[in-house]
Image (tube, rainbow, N blue to C red; front, side):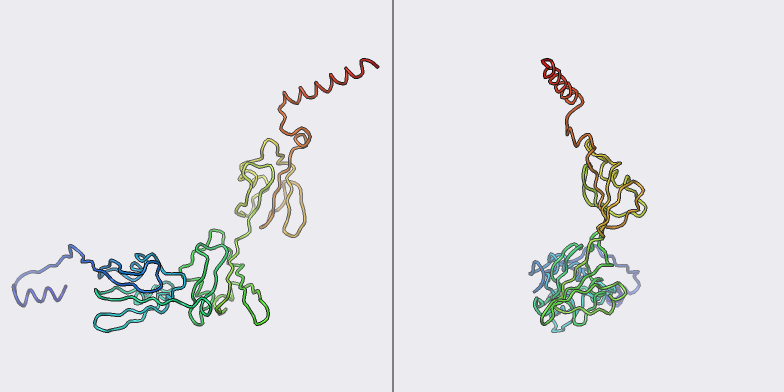
Length: 293
């Protein structure tokens, strides 16, 4: 803008007051090659950054080397980009804008020699190519979307040895110095909640809320059905012990089971009228049987 103003003042109207407003942005096509889901030409402008370009190419491929992107310019200049530094640290130099004629090249990683598998309570589980020396904390601070009930206290790494597999539980205090290796399987477990089963309206798993009682969880599950007796609820603990009663202190992983009422156990779903008729027919049968004695 300053160059435009200077040109006008120097070459046309020396005494003019010049102001410049951008009323329209010119768009052009930029080529994206390699590990994106839709490689080809993408519509761009001089204000669009790499994240927007990748989004228009429908995102990175699962095996993209996001840390080793190359940009080739018409003048022969080559620029290297580590997009993960923008994701982790907000480094805008690693999320640049582009010029017409630029070519963005995103290489594929090798699934056998450079990738890890991500599983469990995450959205978009699958393979990711890791940087050399990438630690678990750097991996987790990528654009990884955790599930609502992800439990980062329970990150399990499965690693292939020469003769056997090893399983390592990594604590949060170890995330920053635990170095990932190609072939690792990262399991992020789901935070254990409370399971409500038996004769309730909506049996299933529910979030653990400290201080909630058995009655609270039965209410969350829609209450007991007509056949269920909430007062006889049984709690099964993860250690195999069993408790009964409404004043039990619940913990993660407990299972609440609401049993049938005693009456329902014997007569099932019979209505009061059906039950009365059933008892009356038994009584009449008894009278008929004893009338000839």
